[in-house]
Image 1 (spheres, helix red, strand yellow):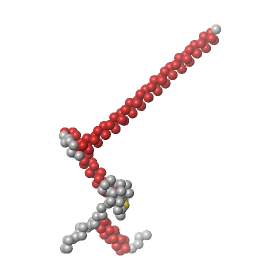
Image 2 (tube, rainbow, N blue to C red):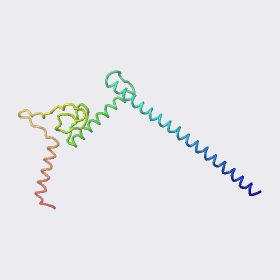
Image 3 (cartoon, helix red, strand yellow):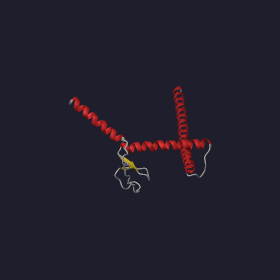
Image 4 (spheres, one colour):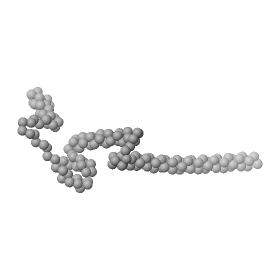
Length: 162
């Protein structure tokens, strides 16, 4: 009889432990689901804030309204950042021996007549010829070539070190 009480008590404890585990699992799953829903809504709100900011910036740039205070400062900061990005893109195009399409901003070959992305005709730029008697300022590439030649001359004078 004592044996039956032991097994009955053990059965009750196991049953309670199982119910507790199921309850805790349910709470965990419910809280995880709700947390995921909250995170999803916050991501959507961030997208809306970004879209709002982009819209306000575009409207300010198009002259649809004149921002003041904090909005004016943010518009100015964005303009400055855009200019920095443009300068970096020009530097990158130079390093890659490419140009930038003036219509869509895509990187294109220097010899391209049309942009492969937007199809726009690329204007041909011809370097300005110096006026008679006017000396042309050296270009960085010319300076680098002159330096490379002078280094080669120096290596020749020193003899082959290899």
